[in-house]
Amino acid sequence: MAMNNHVVINEVGPRDGLQIQSRVLTVEQRLQLVNALIDAGIRSLEAGSFVSPKAVPQMAGTDQLLAQLPIPEEVAYAALVPNQRGFEMAMAAGSRRVNVVLSATETMNQKNIRMSLDQTRQVCADIMARCLADGIEGQAYVAVAFECPYEGPTSQSEVLRLARDMFAAGAAKVIIADTIGAANPSQVSRLMSALIDEHGADRLSCHFHDTRGMALANVLAALKLGIREFDSSIGGLGGCPFSPGASGNLATEDLALMLQSMGYQTNLDAIDLVPVIQLAESLTGAELGGHSYRWLRRQHDSRQAQGAPA
Amino acid sequence: MAMNNHVVINEVGPRDGLQIQSRVLTVEQRLQLVNALIDAGIRSLEAGSFVSPKAVPQMAGTDQLLAQLPIPEEVAYAALVPNQRGFEMAMAAGSRRVNVVLSATETMNQKNIRMSLDQTRQVCADIMARCLADGIEGQAYVAVAFECPYEGPTSQSEVLRLARDMFAAGAAKVIIADTIGAANPSQVSRLMSALIDEHGADRLSCHFHDTRGMALANVLAALKLGIREFDSSIGGLGGCPFSPGASGNLATEDLALMLQSMGYQTNLDAIDLVPVIQLAESLTGAELGGHSYRWLRRQHDSRQAQGAPA
Image 1 (cartoon, rainbow over the protein chains, first blue to last red):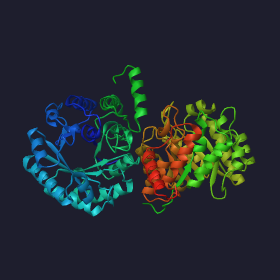
Image 2: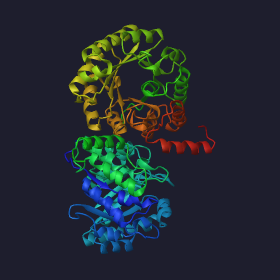
Image 3: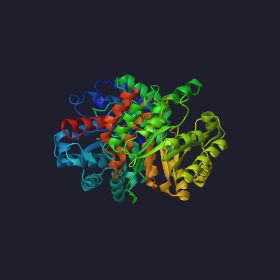
Image 4: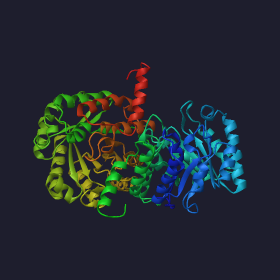
């Protein structure tokens, strides 16, 4: 085990998860979910995004949400911004941490946001530079970092180049995202080793999807190299439209359970996430729960039956 | 990646999986499942057990099944035996590989088979000795090797002692079983490292359950140490009664997909397992499928739509 025993679980359900749900939650409902997550011990969370409410009605009112977030002095809340206009809105709303997304292939950028890779790269670099100048924490996602649904396997040198660009522009952190859940542990070891050699493990994070069931094994591969921050989504909320439930985003409860079992400090007890998953299910109407959910629910129910605090 | 790129996937669905299904299959149905598994590329398989048909009606007629197994010259078929009488039956049926199960805690042996740990150890050692004398491949499972549902965490030194005893008695292989799916990758690394130091990786195998979602991560931990054989069950068939489907046994398709993605040779393409899972579902009436099943089914369907061989 590495010397640093503390692992940050960055919860992305309230943004990455909610944004593709067919049911649009109110700001109050989103806040209810965030409050439950924070109560359970989450201390890093992507709260929302400043995108067009016409394009993504699920994220409308993120400024109102940000104004009401609990214990902001103790929690690192991030807002995703797609462009300068979004960045201005995030600043106006008082964001202290801003995320941008840069896909590592030309086609993914074109299909996703109708911009070339070079244009997106410039927009993201400008925002990272603004973050640095304004004393805001800028975080850059490199999406489809392992495989692109349009172009196939992603070039590692391209991912390295984009990460280098983002750090050079002022990013505090680069998050390597396996957007379609195609990575395997060997690929994770290879890419993350190269990134760690250049930038150190502390400024890197990983975002895995569980489409092919390998998310936790991928976490383990990155963990062994010294990565100490991972994205996940409560109950696996979000992810690929064709695979509801746990096969989208890595579920927070699965990540939390593995890490705590291995002796890492995450500020979470996975069993405490059970009522949060149930809340997310009732709010979204989606069937949720990672691979460990049934087991956790049993533990939670038996703990409650014993009269211990849930 | 280690030098040895070949990994054996030992399929346990036809025994470990079927024995706890409420629907009792006929010998012909069990043979149908075995045939489908062999057609998909499985070359190591636990075919059945020689236990009392009154106690375990699911395994009645294992001698008839063994007589009809396909390409026995190319497949390592195992039969589980609980005692000398079972061993005699396995010999009469022409078994070339025999499995015994020894739980690592006193209470588990008492509860499971109403014998003391010492009694079970003696029975297993005697059978392993008989195997060695008769030129049969004897394999000893050490069950609840990480945690016991009655006694809690299992003593590592006890597991080491039992493995040593089984090898000393004549076992060709010892299989470390996380019977209740409680192990995490750190524990796997610790225990398997100690076992490998004593016996070498080639004579060891691992059997993981996915109750807490960590089975593939545990495989990865063992793989990194040089373990090249793992048990799994088609569609996750079997496992804990309280967690149907994928949260019992590690699903063969999940294991096969991760290993092939990482470049290991297993003689399997996980996509070819889709019709086998469907067959197992129709035979047992159970809802099956590991974490990758939805994704694999999509790949399988699109491959079929393109007219390629399924």
